[in-house]
Image 1 (tube, each protein chain N blue to C red):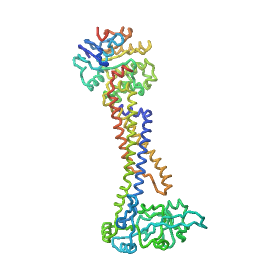
Image 2: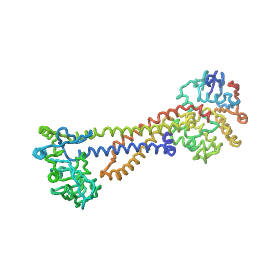
Image 3: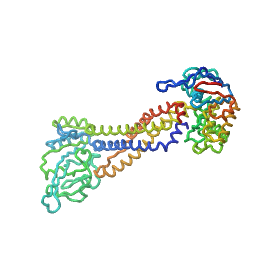
Image 4: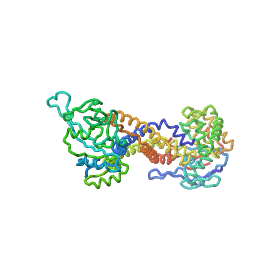
Length: 221
Length: 385
């Protein structure tokens, strides 16, 4: 999927003041690219990711998927695109603690309307791929940070999205776990999936094909 | 099983305290309803079960008291009226009743200053055994004339009276031959009186030729009512009219009971609403993640609404159980103390009504928390988390 931003602005109202989080951003990401979005804290990286991930709408400008303006769609349409075409990985995993690893991975497929048997077998396969075949019934609190993030990655790719978006996915991991999760992202990218990672971590940025830098809402790269 | 149902089942431990709290609140309402139902049955059921088709009082008399001072009055020339009534072809049987008091004398010498004990008596003219459903004897038999008494069950319990015991009333000795009551005279305190043949009562008290009420067994009540009205100076009442009068008399009490029930439902609803809102606030990250990964809003709304519904449905089941236990306790203690069969009656339709109200309450109480959950902004929440 071809992802584009054209002259995108995102401003927030803080009290009486307008704060610009992203300023006239124009960028195109080709299918299959591995992109690292870097920049200091508060520079607008997360805002960029939220706009690409259709969690947020631009104040001005267009976000386009395969040439179609998706940034201004209504909530239901954006929710459907998130479900079918986008996968999210968060810094703090954000798994549902009351569900097992297997159930967490099955969740997006359930929302997409996949039958139980189909989603169960795919979830088992995905957890097997991320090296957690022996942890299917474990709940998130029973897993290490690295294992949780691998479950989150499996959940993110459950509906076979075109684009995988990750916000500081290695921020809470030890080096071994970090390496393993990065390897997962690389594997997913080699399978043809677009990967966009917001990171502070130079190791993560180093494995990306392309770097997009953001400073004070200004995008470069 | 869809996620909203799995979620509600999976969270039963977290929801149980809410279920229990709401269940206890609802059980108060259900118990009050059970008591109302039994009270109404006590007040009105007797008229329907007594087998009597028409009640007669003097004109202006009130068999069911609605205001302080309402009494049935006295029907004069009672023996003549009764004879007339018994002669009508539509009448199977006619029973005259008069309430009176007699002085009970203690066994042995009376101590100085010992208060006089008065006993309420119903003098009965006619044989109630000929009226299906009128006579309810716990033990012994009905009066056959002479100095015999049948005592109400409450009176027997309070005074420790048994069949075969004797009582001195107004200077004469009476034998107790039965324990029980005449149905259809609930307004006369039928459990707490002694029954005596009217002629016998006349021999021991200056009652004159009067009765308070005549109860007529008939298959053609409307014809009998017309005949009674033609006699003049008398009023005729069907059991349905007496039931209606009894319901009017207790209307204010029943209204207050329903207000209490409405308040308990309201409190239960507020409790569910507050607790669920609190729960939604604590689980904002969960809803934000669900929204982020593509769960439609309607799923989030269903998730919380189903939690709310499951709380009130399980609470309804708990409430039925608790109110049955309360009811058993009320019947075993308070009702037994007053010599009543029951002071709590399971009325399935009323229980279902409360159950339905509780379910509706669950839906209403869950609306605001469900909307709150669905309106969670993933961007804001995930930034905070």
